[in-house]
Image (cartoon, rainbow over all chains, first blue to last red; front, side):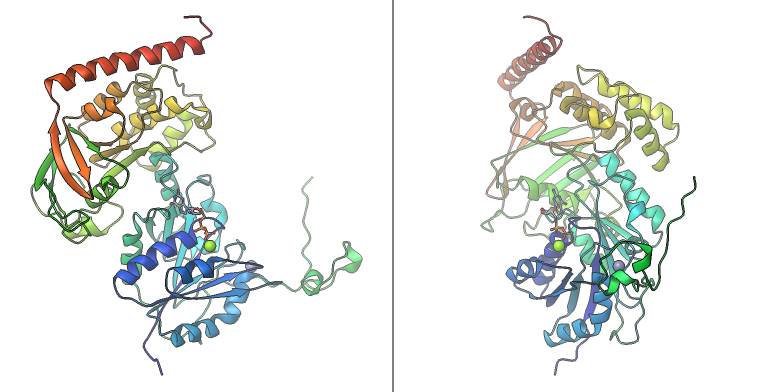
Length: 234
Length: 251
Ligand SMILES: Nc1nc2c(ncn2[C@@H]2O[C@H](COP(=O)(O)OP(=O)(O)O)[C@@H](O)[C@H]2O)c(=O)[nH]1
Ligand SMILES: [Mg+2]
Ligand SMILES: [Zn+2]
């Protein structure tokens, strides 16, 4: 029975930020170093990322959350995903999240949390990304090849202001430049053994209104459960 | 990190054979162009320099700074930027006016006298490009030439990195010679990766890349200097024609 300890890395960040590209570059470096990697992708309705990872010659799995928030889905399945990684004899288990929900952050205290952001977005974007950035251990900035270096610097600074503790690295997902710094940052960190009893770094919102359970009709008379109404100031 | 020169010790090409250039030192205020076909190893060479390779990359090259092996921490930490990049694909995307952005940036980099710094960058940029940029021009409204000029001025004045890499900026409507002089005048080590003959000849020497290795090192000959002057006149002529046509004039 495989019983060696695998390192668990959870990668979050907005869609198209470059999560898959960065993980792929990292896998190349890990393989060069003889490290066994396994990757699990969580998405909502559809994903082809697992095929991309399989083509790189690593074990890959995909989970689809369908009707529920993919980050909730990941929290629900983390124990099983970790067991899968162990069965695949992984030294490092990388979990790519869907990156859609800006309210949730799936990182747990004992795993290594990576947030990928691309600087092609406005320099104000880091503000909007939420707990997936503010709770991460390593922030990866991509697409520096597409914007002026001055803007990348300002972007870097706004990430720093939101998360004082994170290690920030710049990686070009397309060419792999800088990926070695991500590897160094991950190598330097440990994830504690086992996920059972581990805790989320950030609470997830309750999703228990009528619409959560299939209601489609609009209007107060159809709403039950936790119903939060907007307040208008005028 | 700061240094006066880098020395590249040659490694191996794609076939594992020793590359021809065994040792090469480049100092501040010098321009070297890197020449070669696509796939000849230009990017790899830049990457080796950026990482301060110590025989630990596929090419087995070693990079010294000021003739010494650089401290380990500089090789590991991403915040010590050694090479600032300036490439054809880079654009300004921020929704701010030039002056506003440059001041914001100077403040966030803790550059003293942010307003002066911004002014100086815009002035320098205007020396490189025919169409003037103002404090009020939105960054996203800059033409290709204007944004290239602003990036070059900004890099020359503000970049911490001692090495500036220019990668394929030939199509921009800027005075290339003046651009190089601006960078060199600010005591940068300038590496130019290019297919553009004017830029290729603007360096002190050319590193010729072939099959992953540094295959040759060519100094600019007397004849090449003449060619360079002619190309420069042509470049100026072409920019002037462009300017007049844009101004609605007939030639
Ligand atoms: N130019 C450039 N493109 C990148 C970079 N990183 C990622 N990309 C591209 O951005 C697109 C989205 O990347 P992907 O990894 O699929 O994003 P994900 O949704 O976060 O997994 C792809 O076409 C990548 O090739 C980068 O640093 N530079
Ligand atoms: Mg992806
Ligand atoms: Zn959610």
